[in-house]
Length: 268
Ligand SMILES: [Zn+2]
Image 1 (tube, helix red, strand yellow):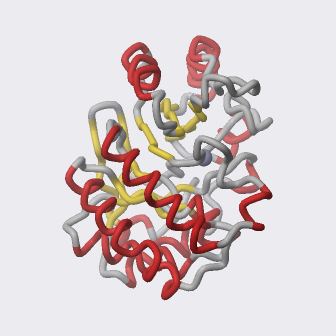
Image 2: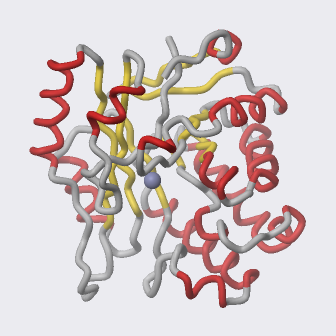
């Protein structure tokens, strides 16, 4: 089986306008989208970002009929401290083939906000990984730990600076990811758009040394131009760490895709 992108947004996410049908023109036999589910502070006027699950399911059904392809359902859970009951309740009522766990927001800001680049980078890193450490202890019902570096994407930290500030915390976080069978995501937006390849080299080795065996490659596409972006580069990184498979998810199933086969003819 060919690998397919495990982190993709369509217009069922609040921050994408791309139609699922457009991705399907590029996709092989299988496709999954992973839509944002973000609970925020209760007094946040912008409101929670939920998925219109009925419409999402209808569109998937319609496109499966039209294209004959398999379309899987995915969610990117944006963890928010204190909203765990709502997250759990939503996931109990709605089925997904793959659940990504992401850490985007502190109580006061999104780590992607412009204000973050004016803050002390080492303080931001420390704050981000403390939040992730607490969060992953409180909530870990997910298949994949997505973009472990989201909070430091814009900070231009060297791996040395990163290790000094957040190395111990990240190691403890990855220990829990391994314990709870969560895959490590190679997020190619982080790696190649935000130039965090060094941090991925560092973290993937820790995850592997801790016994982690599950890896996904996700572009984090918000439009079709990003679909499967830099996939081959991420494969090369895995191989450089002597890792020779990637994983894809189906409801209640984790599938191993050997890289040495996928290489031969990448179809997506
Ligand atoms: Zn995403």
